[in-house]
Image 1 (cartoon, rainbow, N blue to C red):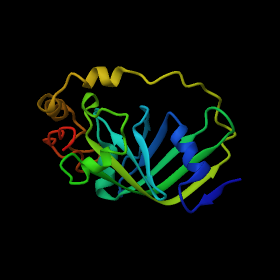
Image 2: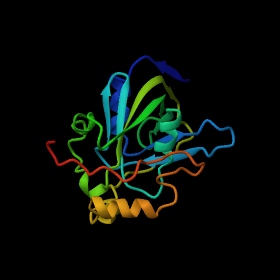
Image 3: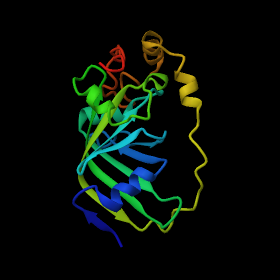
Image 4: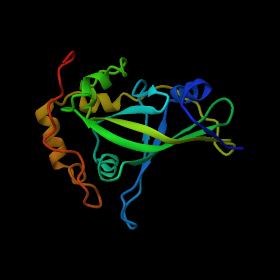
Length: 198
């Protein structure tokens, strides 16, 4: 039923780019560490960079488990499910890296997300994932569900923050600078968001 792919292209690429939501899974190296699973959405916040590399935008939130795990060991799995149309599940197993605001690659990476204004969402990092294994499976057990629209709550919540107030928000949160298991999370203070065009 399942199939392994050597690259992210054609039908596979079209499928993952068409899905309104995907999931990320990471874990620390410690055997008793906390496994993290997160939903990701917001139209335009995911991009295929090439046949072996994908990226997504990491927005402001109340923790930074994915960032912490990637900084420690890089392991990540991304998963997409077909909630409409033919049943399908696609997983990309690979190595991820959080690219932060002060990284020289920042501007070039943001160019892959032309439909997103990073400022209203408190963009913290671009997560870049190099695929090591790409597989699909049937998805027969996934229900039909309809996509209506993106929620505007994230933009409304973080759109009123500037660099200083966003830093203050992160500093008050228990699991931003440090993960649940005590791993280094988001480097604080957060570098200022570069101005568009820089």
